Image (cartoon, rainbow, N blue to C red; front, side, top):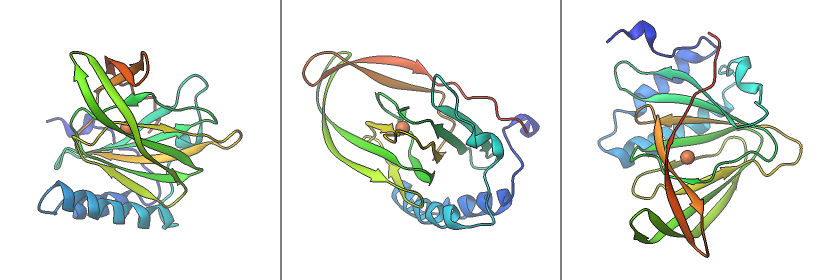
Length: 198
Ligand SMILES: [Fe+2]
């Protein structure tokens, strides 16, 4: 593999962040790994040595920004920073079967989990199964098959920043378009990353 081509931005505390993530991956299974990553994430958000690159603090007008900061050649995981302008959010989506740990770096986010009640081909029936209002320093994890959720910045005036560690780069996922009542239509979606100048 040509590791020089992998995303790898320079920023203060980058090595500390990567070392913490690498250490958490020593867990015996995905539950242990994501639990360790949640703890590491909470500590990293509060660690003044770690300062995400400036680009992460720039929202993009017409969509929430996804900037890949790092991809591990050794372990395969991907670190993505997301920038949520006031009112920006996602539809219900899955994570393509990948576990993920997500932390709120700055601002506040509403995260709503959905329970899959039934499926008829490409039509899925969901019900909101709980939500949380997450502030800076909090972290949660998703382990498939419990992966259906939305994220939104409900603030009217403050940008939010979140940091996501995926088991592997997530380049596709399913998004779910509301139909009627609790039914949604599954749409295959390609996820783009926004430019993150090195
Ligand atoms: Fe997600």
